[in-house]
Length: 172
Image 1 (cartoon, rainbow, N blue to C red):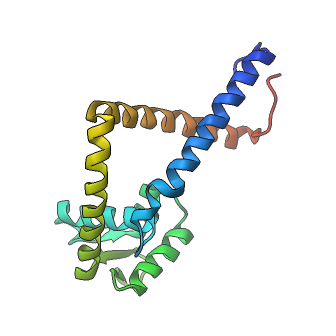
Image 2: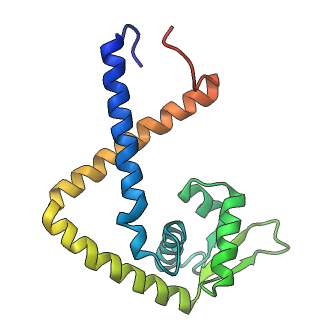
């Protein structure tokens, strides 16, 4: 927050913050979750990333390393392992390792994983085709670009807070 922001400016920022938080909550609450009956949204994102990686990378023979998946999803290795374990238990992934495991563990998508991913993508496509028709493709593209910019700024702010450990700081 800029120095010298008065009470009115702080109230406006609070209103914007609350509205943003509320909109994010609504988007995550029911709009999309209704389409995810067999897997969660994070599991879908993971499967999509793993499948996409296997299509474009002959070098790794369809392998996606846990470290890479963790970084892509911005979650800890522990959380990634837990999610991958659940997907493996559902028969959607095979989880393996190089050598004795010290060189990295990786996952590959199974035929069942590809099938479920395809079904999930089809359901989302049917829904979002209608949403995009009503909202406008250019509006959605602009919104996504703005969200990426906002995410970059928010990440930068979180990093600065981590350096100063001043999340609940003041303007002084």
